[in-house]
Amino acid sequence: MRIALVYPEESRKLQSIAAGLQSVFQDAGHSVQQMAVGSNTGGSSLYACDLAVVGSSISGFLGGKFSPIIAAFLQKSTGLERKKVAVFVSPHVFSVTKGTRRLMQALEQRGAFVFDFRTIRSTHEAQEFGKKILAAAARK
Image 1 (cartoon, rainbow, N blue to C red):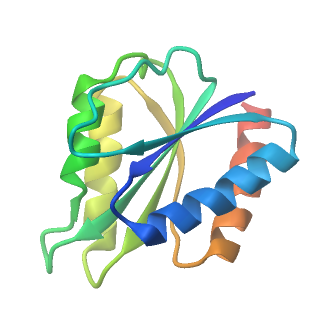
Image 2: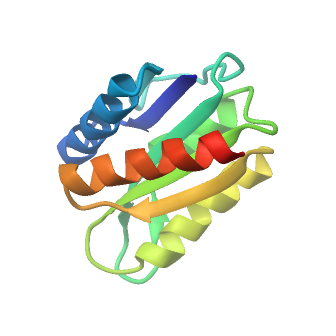
Image 3: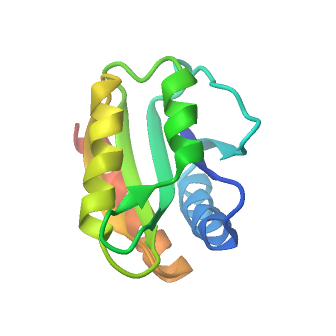
């Protein structure tokens, strides 16, 4: 399976979470394309991947906002229609649920099918989520 792993490049925590996910996917024999998205990154085509895993940090005291870099990337990207997507977020303080919902809504508005999501705080949690993603993707 070809997996796109999308996350904002400015967050070291998200980079370590992405590395944990990538190790699980590659150990299971899947091809992983890491897409560390920066403020200057344009959209990308996700047609070639079978599964997309999108990560973001959640900020805001009560507003629960996901990364504007990811929001811009999703607006410019193609190939999300009917794509299976898993979402992971890294919390700062509060409003994780609201921010996660907003990210999932942005993906669903682009035609993606969000089948799983999780708040991740450590590499170990990332690896467990990666195993869960692969098991769920195999069933669908």
